[in-house]
Amino acid sequence: MHPSKPDTDAGYLEAAARIIFMGGLNRQVVDGKWPGFRAVFAGFDVDAVAAFSDDDVDRIAGDDRVIKYRAKLAAVVRNARTIAAIAADRGSFAAYVNELYDLEGPGGASRALAKEFTYVSEQGAKHWLYATGYDIGEVTDKVRRKYAPFVG
Image 1 (cartoon, helix red, strand yellow):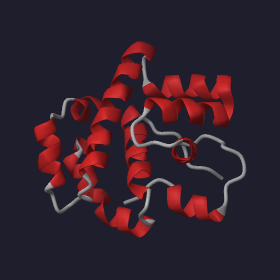
Image 2 (cartoon, one colour):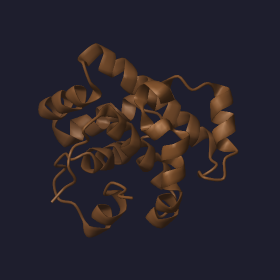
Image 3 (cartoon, one colour):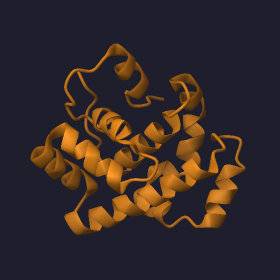
Image 4 (cartoon, helix red, strand yellow):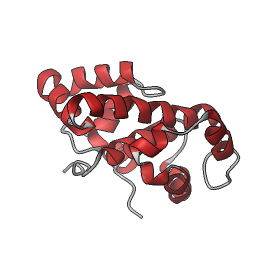
């Protein structure tokens, strides 16, 4: 069984941010900081995060509630801008991902997302699809444990 799809585009941004920060870290480390991420990134409201400046990223990078990896924090802001632009063009980011997935399947959708988003590899994009409720085929217990959405 895979996770359910997000109700809003904020859910897609949050899942992408988790994928970015899971790279090189275990889930417990990321989960321990995740409430802080939600706070500093305005609940992952896409428009709010897309409006963040470099000064905002610098401020967040000094906040003990998050993992202080400035390049990845800045990637969350850039990815929010990408999601906002796609949503403005397509009505919602979810509509875009649904169309991409229907046309390209999980492999093609993963490749396309990896090309468009900062700090998201093709494998990361596949995990992003899984974490946002898309069937990506066989999923190992390890992937299920690591990339299932944060609950808390």
